[in-house]
Amino acid sequence: MRISGRNISGLIAGILGRTLEPRRATFLPFLDGGGHALDEGLAIHFVGPASYTGEDTLELHGHGGPVVMQMILRRCLELGARPAKPGEFTQRAFLNDKLDLAQAEAVADLIDAATTVSARCAMRSLQGEFSSAVDLLVAKLIEVRMRVEAELDFPEEEIEPAHRDDVANRLEALGVEIDRAIDRGRRGSVLRNGLNVVIAGRPNMGKSSLLNALVGEDLAIVTAIPGTTRDAIRQAINIAGVPLNIIDTAGLRETTEEVEAIGIGRTWEMIGLADVALLIVEAGVGIQAEDEAIFSRLPDKVVRVLVYNKVDLIGGHPSIKEEAGNAVLHLSAKTGAGLDLLRDVLLETAGWMPGSEDVFMARARHVDALARGSSHLSAALTEISRLEVCAEELRLAQQDLCEITGEFAADDLLGEIFSRFCIGK
Image 1 (cartoon, rainbow, N blue to C red):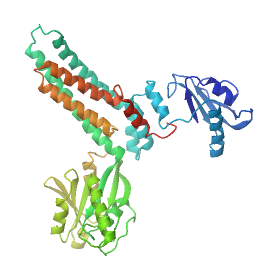
Image 2 (image 1 turned 45 degrees about the vertical axis):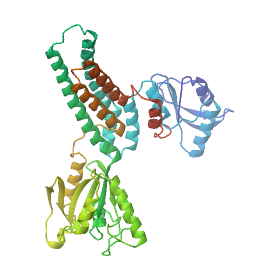
Image 3 (image 1 turned 180 degrees about the horizontal axis):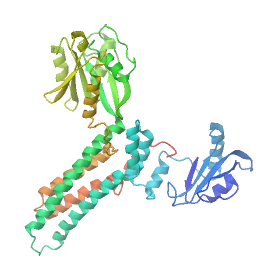
Image 4 (image 1 turned 120 degrees about the horizontal axis):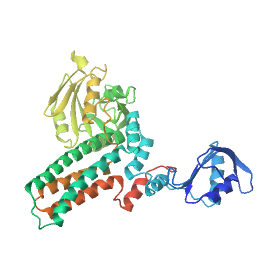
């Protein structure tokens, strides 16, 4: 149990009956109002600002039974404490300059990490790697702003063309660095949220078999009867440390059967939310008019991978090629032949190569802030002949980047971020 506040000496004396040596674990009983032991365990007193929150903090390590912990909690409340809100300890750490906002968010990312790769990336962000990269971009941006502002402050001085060229070169180089950060952030966001992969196609094409093959167990019922799958089946897996949300869906066809029609409607909803659509056709039959109709309805934002399944039935072999910018695979979900090719395609779609962890554990707001900063930087470059406009665009770009670490952050944004934390963090 963790208690944090500006002055908790009275609470420490009330529940422990004595003072504690700072930063030293002490074994002793935890007392109720009458001086009777509720439990016994380790107590540690961290004196602010040398604590997680930057305030005085007391940690009680007891036996952990729910009834005993409730008794200790009740005693803390009697002594003037109150229950913490979700994320309040980390929010206090942020407000007391122990963490910046990106580091604070990395705490939640580390807790929620679904793979070892995402956990390592979150830990690097918590240690300040992402924040340091953003701070470096801001420092370079400030340097360019200083040059532009200096020219505005001394309008009577003739501005040398070489000086303008230097500013333009610096802006171009900075734009490249921000774009690289955006790419690393987008790839890192896949580690947080996973890649949503929908398996779609006409009935009886082997969609459920492919799901079972990718997952490694029989989750979906497989029969020769078309329309067996009526509702979406979701399963989280990971490939080379990258989380994927695999979704098997109802076969797409015209039907008057009510339950199947509902499943088909949900299939299109899933496709609309997907990052990747695996479009399954039968290798021995090829693309039919019904398949073409399905392809034409796919949203433009969804990456399409055409999968010719059941190559084992025609004596074919696994293969991969590219047509019109889309991957085309031949495989067998039944035998597993070609599944490695499919896994490689999914990793490539996620922007991830095995062994590559040079990404930022970014959130959507981080990528958005970087993109807005990049846009203002591009505008500044086009307005370099009008220094007043250029200077304003650079100011806006700096503000966007500083939102990431919380140097500029609205209160409602902070509330939204920390409300997603668990209680006790």
